[in-house]
Length: 147
Image 1 (tube, rainbow, N blue to C red):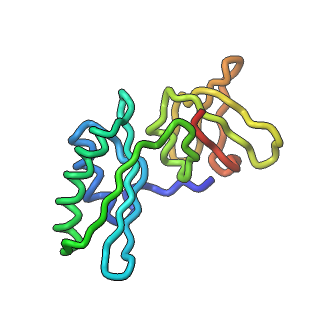
Image 2 (cartoon, rainbow, N blue to C red):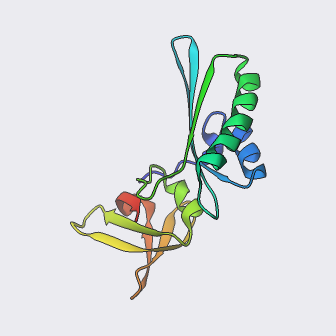
Image 3 (cartoon, one colour):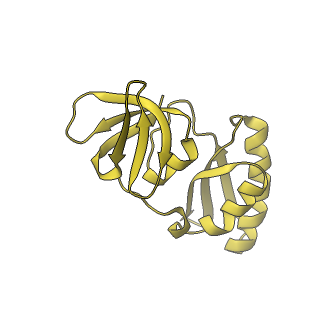
């Protein structure tokens, strides 16, 4: 699994402080142009979960910010929670899900490993399986999802 530093994702640096200021963390941000309109997909998480009202609050703030950044009134913003069984797309997300239970399928294994995410950095994630703590390099993770 690749580790992509969030600060290298286009527009993340402009949106992440705004989302954090509202009390949430920005898990994923995609900004792309489709025909004449800008499409934005954001995934947020919070300590107490994320509901519809949380998504609406972040939506209003992001829409205003992105209209200014993109210099366009044709911006469509979709804000969602990560969901109960989110597939982790970027190893940098593990930092946001510390304390959560996840399933990991390693490159050379057929079975899934399940455990709580203890910590994560730019090279590996520490997983507590209940019987042992495993430090798994991101390069050895074929797939991961929240459980």
